[in-house]
Each structure stands twice: as C-alpha cells, then as structure tokens.
Image (cartoon, rainbow, N blue to C red; front, side):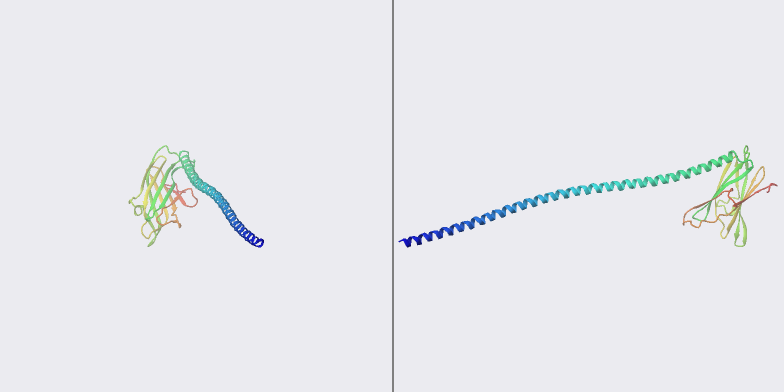
Length: 264
C-alpha cells in the first residue's frame, strides 16, 4: 500500500510541476509582450516628439528664409532706387553744367555786344553753325553782330559764295544754287545782333573748300569773311544730324577783310 501511495503522490507532483512550469512560461511570455508593447509605445512617443520638434524647426527655418528673401528684395529695390537716383543726379548735374556753360557763353556774348572792345568796330560774324542732316542737306545758322558803337541800326545785305572743286575744276558757286529756298542773299537790319537761318543743299559733284561772306551795309564800309568748309564727321551714324559750330575767334579758320578802302 505504501508503494502505491508513493506512486500516486509522485504523479501528482509531476502534474503540479508541469502546471507551474506552463504557468511560468505563460506569465513570462505575457510579461515579455507587455514589455515590448511598453517599449514600442515609448519609442513611438519619442519619435512623435522628435518629429514635432523637427517640424517646428523646419517652420522656424522657413520663416527665417522668407524674412531673408524679403529683406534681399527690399535691399535690391533700395539699391536699384539708389542707382537710378545716382544716375539721375549725374545726368542732372551734367545738364546743369551744360546749361551753366551755355549761360556763361551767352552772358559773355551779351557783354561783348553791350560793351565791346575798343578795337572791335562794325559788323562781325560771331559764329555760324552747319548741321549736316540725314537727307544730305545742311541747316545753316549765322549770328551777325554790330560791335563798337551800336546807337543806330545797320541795314544791308549779306552775300554768300562757295569756293570748291566741281567737275571742271575749281568753281565758285553762288548762294542761289545752294539755298533750298533759292535765296540770292540775306537781308539784315540790326542794332545789336541778328540771327540768319537757311537750309543748304550743295550741287551734285561740287565739293566746297571755303565759304565767303560779304556784308554790304547801306551806309558804311563793307566787310568780308572767309572760312574753311568743315570736314564731315567720320563717326556720324546713318540718319543722324551732326552739328559743326564755327566761331570767328578760332585760330586759323577764317580771314577777315574790310572793304571800301579799309582792307588790311
């Protein structure tokens, strides 16, 4: 009987150990499962927090980039405005300097007319301008001045002739063949000064070398001036106008002859 009881007791112990072992395995597996779930949850929370931090950093950087781009645009606009302002200022300065120079020249002209040098008497050509035009003609402007005593008016006529070379050699061409309006001479009537204008077109095949002006007042002595024909500008653009100003006080560009026994 004792041996039978031992066998029954031993079998019961084995079943108990097996059950406990199974329970331990189950408990261990559940604990591992819970630990894995907990660790995964913490990892997800950490990743989510890191992603939120990175998103916040990205938003901050994007905001700074937009601010810097806007600042760059403002600086470019300010720089462009400054550049335009500087260019405008320079252009205005050049314009003012040119105007000032022209005003000084005009002032000098009026002073010379109102209070001329004692050695300067009678009619003078103060300057004349030739403007070469695109159609081959010339815009002519001349300033005739009465120097010295100008308490009375001077009346008369100004004759112009052109000296140069034509198809038959040296040739002298009268104004009537050059003036587009067919004018034979230019009448003048002045106390201080008078501007004379016309349009010239040279005859075909004629190349002028000199221009002669002969002024004959109704009263007083005649005057004659001779100028070299200005060389055409070599840098003239097609279709543009080129202005050549010739002043009697330039060196070696004219000869001044006095008429009626006053030739010198």
